[in-house]
Length: 199
Ligand SMILES: [Zn+2]
Image (cartoon, rainbow, N blue to C red; front, side, top):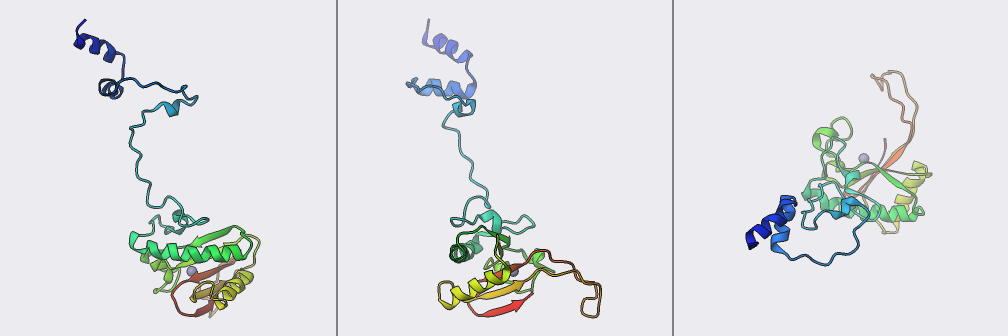
């Protein structure tokens, strides 16, 4: 049998991709086959790059949490802002005993921000987070942030308190009425100067 017919005989039973492996590399001693069929795929398969919103910013906060609710991930040029913000959110989280902290709103595109915040919102530059902490009242979360700023453990910035509130019918102040807010939250941003408000 010639080398060619020998090779042809070996290739016939193999898938084309595997056949290339047979030609280029001698068979290696294999460990016991894994139980999961999925693991038998050749190792040379390329691993695709993770999507922009995958992975963690810090120990407890993910890029996905900070993406705009319209599906836009945090733009690369604004990512350093999120990294710094999360460093301080981790400090706040630890101060409250490591309870789960939820980011209600992080980065917002200018289009998404319309009607949701002021036009110069720190959310548009990914320096702001609207947060809630499980089992912690918004007033307590606000007080914790104020205390950490006073101790210079996190930077000065903007703090907005948003308390739960009932629905109100249309009035002079609220011509369209005012929707109920079932849960409250606190806005914290790292604009670098003091700003306080109640929303
Ligand atoms: Zn906010």
